[in-house]
Image (cartoon, rainbow, N blue to C red; front, top):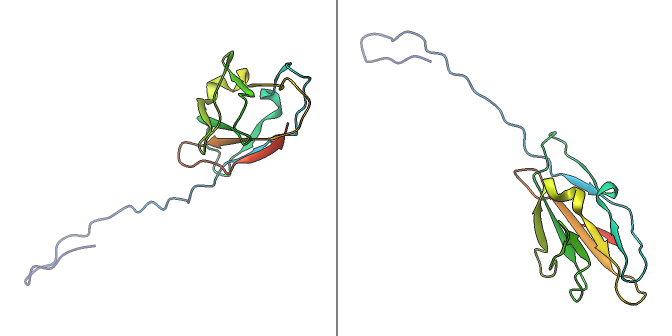
Length: 128
């Protein structure tokens, strides 16, 4: 572009315009899990995430939809994953993610979500 002051035109000036692609939400995949009563199972290898922009996953959230027992273990400790937002942890702790069975037999729905630095994925439900 250039400007005109009523007498003369200025020289041409270039402008660079960058177009950004909209962020693609990450997509979490996990298979249903089972474990014996009061037993613990590491489920980190069952969790996979794809991101359309190739963004690095920086955080995860887990949620216990029953809201009565702490079925998730992160970094060796049971965590309270009840409530609307569940329990959030850094992606570096994914390798420590485990589930613990209740004292008696039953089935429930647990959820997990991933954060790509911009947006959270949808909750992915799995049967436990």
